[in-house]
Length: 68
Image 1 (cartoon, rainbow, N blue to C red):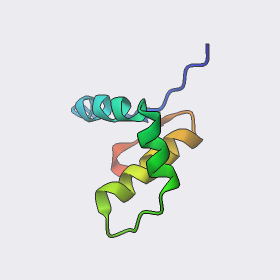
Image 2: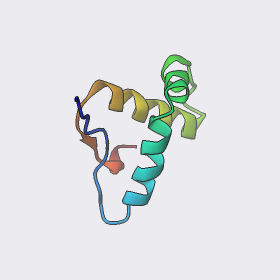
Image 3: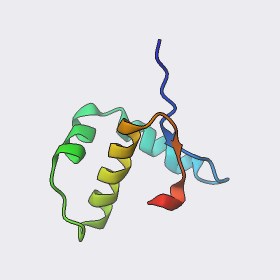
């Protein structure tokens, strides 16, 4: 079994956010939509979700919440 360590580093109270992101990340159609769709920078939440999900797909490590 291959276990990926994708998610956020816990900075004390980010575990709640991480659990939400992990749940969304398990919805393959949603993640694929964000990754494949051209989202303009001015759509900040969608653009950051695309950046986060793309990064989680590419690397096998946790991501610091400060980066998005």
